Image (cartoon, rainbow, N blue to C red; front, side, top):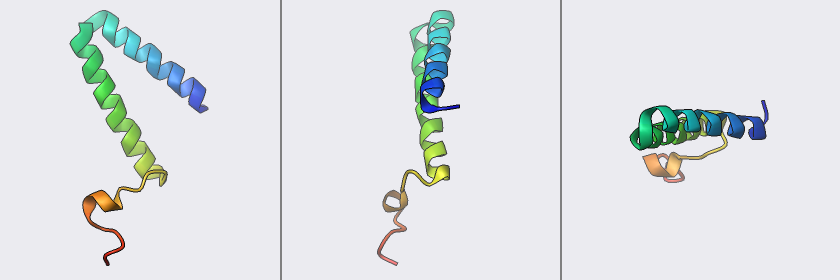
Length: 59
């Protein structure tokens, strides 16, 4: 699944969450989606968070 299809799927799921649960459900779904995206990028090695956690060039 490429990035366009993933973005379309995420948008559709956010739309369903907003339509069925209201604005608060939309916001919660959006925040959890962003957390999942960041975790996925860290696990894939596309996002370096070593500076945030203090394990960087100092060692």
